[in-house]
Amino acid sequence: MIKFTVATVTYNAGKTIGRTLESVSRQDHEAVEHLIVDGCSTDNTMVEIHHYVERNTDQSHPHAIVLVREPDSGLYDAMNKAIQQAKGDYIIFLNAGDKFHSDTVLTDVAAQIEERYNPTRRPAVVYGETDLVDDEGRFLRHRRLQAPKHLQASSFLGGMMVCHQSFYVRTDVARTEAYDLRFRFSADYDWCIRVMQRAERRHLTLHDTGLVLTDYLSEGMTTRNHRQSLLERFRIMAHHYGWAKAIAAHLWFVVRAVVRR
Image 1: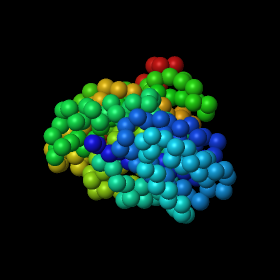
Image 2: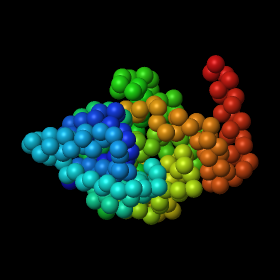
Image 3: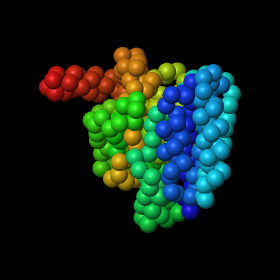
């Protein structure tokens, strides 16, 4: 059975983490490790987590819960810790406020992988669509950028074409690429590109599930720091695709935004 590590990185997330914990607990797939990396929260985050652990023991098929609580150098440093400690075949980042789109997401994804791929050649990346929700978890809209049917590293010249939370990476592949801590807001964009580049060099598949995988909290760190995120994204794009393509892509982003007004 395919095992998934769901990594949840937290810091003072008491207001939103409950929705995420509940979503993981409701997954009907049996082989789930929930790895929670907390940067020494000072609010009620740990209270929520302890209640979650207690509820988990009462389930007929309890998930494995691993809690790491120690200082870190920020979100992406904590995510690097999660990659190194993950025990699952695939790692999924589902942070406070985000949740799985349905209770059967992991079962459905595992079924696709097991039906279509040899266990020795499983996809490097399994991905899908994302819906945006508000701070209360209510549906807002489908994500504007839709996941390509045939994803490749060059697809991200058009921006973050797959939401990070709907980008499941084979753990052995994920361990070959750490998040670059020089980027404060867009290291996930850079990381996804490098993961796909490595997959392509190893001739590994990027599998489109065709499913909505995640309900994503729209007011994440990148959204709150939109301008800084865009500047980082431009630098990352120029590094991976060249300055000319990065400038052309951002000119198109401006035109597209004006046309949609």
